[in-house]
Image (tube, rainbow, N blue to C red):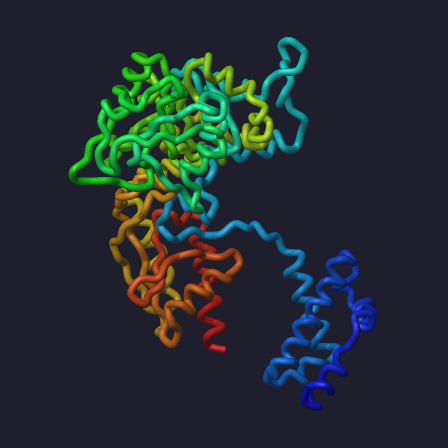
Length: 472
């Protein structure tokens, strides 16, 4: 090792020395010792790495004053929350990476109320004895879907796993080859089926499956017939599929339960609002499916949950499965889900009050008005380096739902002289709170469909900061 590096390494202060120095600084008085020690060690490790890599001007960073400033910054980082709110300017409404659906204010208020007090989570107030947590939402789910029974677990993958394990473990589950979907994170229907103990039996081809394919595959080892809604992709052209109603007819003929995984289930007929038609949960119940599973946090606009509705005889069997306990949801999820479901009693109110539904059905004129307001605010900064344009682009539904649906939206395209689009994106992403947009044609794009009214001030604050720092 070069003598100069050895000399610099010797100048690095020890942990005990730096801890002693922090005692004279009021900033460190109430810092937990574990946080302080970890921060000191992290800063020393970083400085050691800089010395070994011959970082420029490293010697200037070895004074106690400079090191204490670095420790202070590290402590602030350590004390900051990891999960934080941000601005979604991507135009993807149900953005999985950004937390999917926003909750209605009614759901947020109910979470706070239930979280801050004891509740009747598993206590029957009428009988004065232990009850079931499913009772909090079962009645409202049955009311909305017209199903005989219902229950809720932690997510839809869990719902599918539980239903298959209960009804088809050790037996074959027949499903069309064209419905063996893969959802986010390389999570595949065949993998879920394998874990459940159900034996997958594929029928038909990727693009065409007929009723005779199901009937030809049924034997003494068949446990159920499974239909999976291909919500995250679309096959077009020379295609044929078996409808749920047809599958139910086959199930009745051979006395086999029929299960449908709707994925991003919805109670809303989006075709009424100019969007593509998605099968609703109510339609699946009406078609006679014995078990229907779907998500609570996608097109439904509630918290993460896997909802199971259907015939009482099958729901009762699923409830008794020991795996149910490992997949059950907590009181906060139940509080948010119940409040969300109650809004659906008035469909028009649900559109207005549930953020996901409101953003998906938002009129173009309303988005344009919001875009023009932000455009005027940015232009009023009177900074010659800032260039802002209004564009008509497309938003996306997201969450694996309506994959080919394009939602016309009004967007702002921003460039700053002397800054690349990547640099603007980095600055916006590192603002507090972060602002997440997208880059197109060397410009930073903000889609106003997913920008909330309260986000406008945050965006303006970010551009004030970016332009001020760029001058310095």
